[in-house]
Length: 217
Image (cartoon, rainbow, N blue to C red; front, side):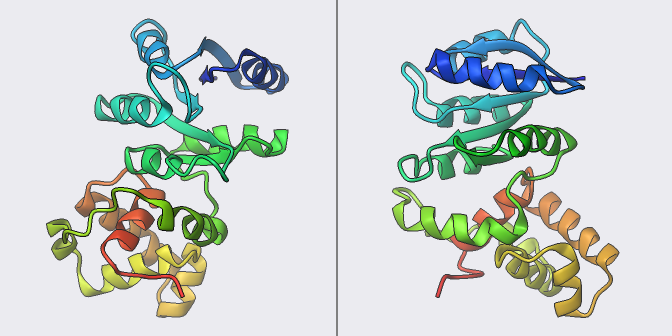
């Protein structure tokens, strides 16, 4: 059973999500919060596997709440955003969120995203990562231009794999382009995440863009 905490300042939105998830076998909504602080408080009382997190909320927004949840090794966080307005959802991914969805996504995609995040995968499909990042990167207010010393830990091949991953390729596509087996690519991705101390593919893509390993255009 996947235990879900819904966090959104709009009660009607939470009600809609709850009704959708109620029909899903293997998913149980164990709590609701109207802001990030309330979500943190509930996590001290209730066992949760996935937090569905809005971005813009009173008291504590979704970015700060995500940062605190991930810093203390809490459950996976799935960000929901209106996309055109919530550029800071990108900051939440940097803080450790496992991915994000648009609020107008189909119900089936929403429930599948929860299952995907629970499995430990990124909810953003590799084929759409580049398009999503191209929207957010120009609006980032605090992209760190200082070289990250962790990048030096990567081997030349791992840097190649990371660049292709950031370009939106699947493991199979990376394998074909670099003439590797898909299993070898999976191993490289695992090593990349370990060396860079990142939670998943999405954060790896963010790292690659911030460090100039891949650029738009």
